[in-house]
Image (cartoon, rainbow, N blue to C red):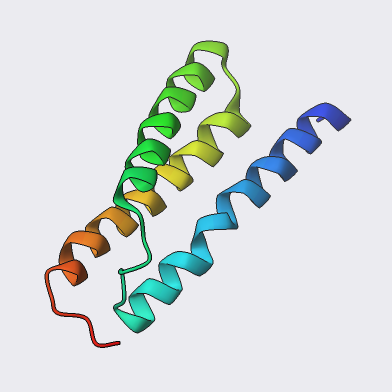
Amino acid sequence: MDWTEFIGHLGSALSSVTFMPQVYQTWKTKSVKDLNLTMMLIVFISTLIWIAYGIGRGLLPVIICNSIIAVLSLVLIFFKFRYGAKKEVI
């Protein structure tokens, strides 16, 4: 593994964890009032495009990172519908 591949995997790992605190916070509090559904859908669609690009170019860091982000954004979208249907207490 050369340094550019290492940097790619490191960047991929760091990008992948960006949604984890939000997923945990939303799961813990069951509060979705501050989650923007449009933004989450854009993130999900863009990750699918990046996955297709990564597959086409054979870029494993791009595929891994965006697959993880796609799953985490789907979890947040699920939470938005699951917990958003309930009346939130302020």
